[in-house]
Length: 196
Image 1 (spheres, rainbow, N blue to C red):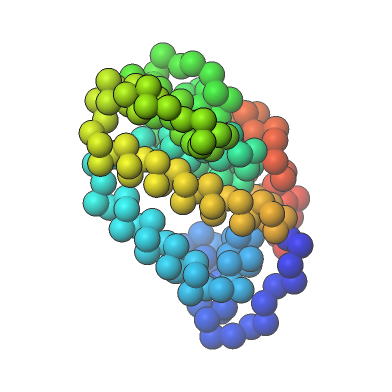
Image 2 (cartoon, rainbow, N blue to C red; image 1 turned 135 degrees about the vertical axis):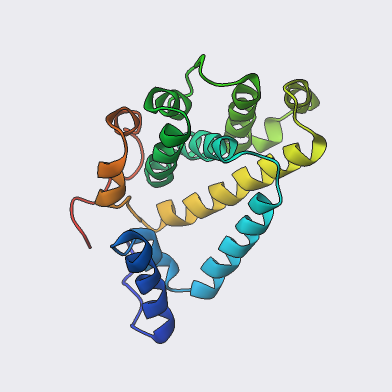
């Protein structure tokens, strides 16, 4: 990344150790967010508040992130969440969402959701009432539309910070994603070749 790592403090050590305990390595994004762990924790708490009380399924949340991250050109979240979507569906479906291709394996709700999120990511001022009506027609309630939009915006903000600061996807994340997902992510900052 473009920033130097923060000095070791108890808080920074806690952030890194949490990654080691959960993943076995320190994520590159944690090295950036360790400059303000309180902001990272606040972001995570707000995101969790939104998603745990939402009726959006884990698969729909993965569609949101894959559509948003790939529209933004963010390789890190595209790889990480492409892997999650591949686990919830399959690798071909995840690759299709990342490449903005139609896919029969997606439900009408998921197709409408991906289309909406791409508009939110690329031209939020260009959305129209008809776009929201398409979500209603696909079965989304008003609160779900708000939650999907808010979650997409949260993820776009998170990706923007990482991308702007030169944070590259971890080699471990890239290697653990299915090949179809890796092939669908030729954009953005490519994964780190080795641990930082």
